[in-house]
Image (cartoon, rainbow, N blue to C red; front, side):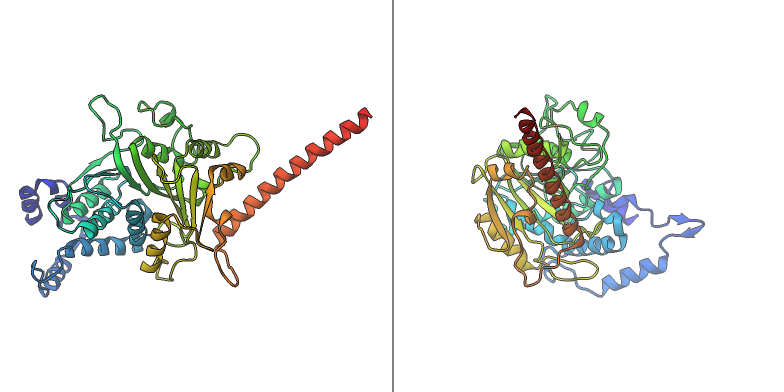
Length: 411
């Protein structure tokens, strides 16, 4: 009754906090016994939680803590709704939102990326009411996760429009003429390597996939193109992806859909940076990820900044994490466009082309280490790259030998 009354008085919480039946049963037994609820209420009653007793964001921080703990216990499924806190903070730092911007996450999960952008903005501008606030937008396909996101933004007192639905087939944010609405910033962490039927791309009414159709086995470049189509003419985006998104298909014979789409993004001078993250940060995999930064108005046309942050982590349980020092260093390198030995390097679009549009930072930047021990996933990726290069060299050699043999016969 209490949650229904709160939802009645706060329309933004309708369908969010009144979704749970505390008397629900399973196999004839109460799922949540009264004793547990009573213990929780008694524990909270011991604390003074008034506005004069705690920091303003106490509920938001508590909610984030509970989400993280839930993620730690959820194993593989956690990746559907939770991006590690420090990764979200890093993305907010490098996007660095400015007054009046509209920020969008098409696969919003529990809302963490939008919230970190909000907190970064508050860190810069405080409670200055003369500064035009940010406006936030998000879409989520899973009803329970959608409810979490709405609760999360409500607790953080954000002006956020969160909608339920499948972004790839039914994007929720459209203009009156049916075209995609566009935003200043996009922050996202879509599920990696999703399977989508080719009809999603072939029958798209919004013109999102102008750079090509990704393979059915991996929607990474489908998501990237949706986000790109959702950017204003001077818009920027940061998206977390599997490392293979920036290297798959390079140095292979014939056409490769992902490599070919990557090539078009490079040729159109849209890729600004790639940041390789450490292994074992994410809750749904031990593999390292990357942050891909796309900018329609690049600060340095013709250049791409590659940052290999694979060693900038500390061990934790159950996951590794990026310490504040690492977040600050990576953000500084990106914002100041710096080259640092063992950490970052600037390449030209032409150099990317010479490497068949492989944009993996580990290819260009070797971390400083007395005895480098690579994560298994990185070592395997490098091995595949080396094998592909060897195969190409063998083919080139065979072509030369065939030409020499033909010339010898003609003589």
